[in-house]
Image (cartoon, rainbow, N blue to C red; front, side, top):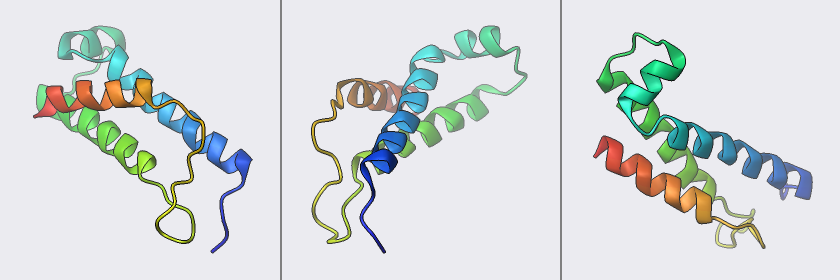
Length: 92
């Protein structure tokens, strides 16, 4: 296994932004159904929020090959941390 390149790390961080956007945009069931026109149940919506929240937690925990050093350097996790808090409040 090789260390992630700077481009790979940037792509991972960008993907995290997609989950942040989804959680923030769909922070209420009514906002979600209005925006998407989805017929998902509230339970299904909460499961989607939970998956995206857990995805953010996994991304934050990424380590280098040594298994202890974070891959992250100067990235700001302010928006990610806020989305994790919002997401947990929704499905907890």
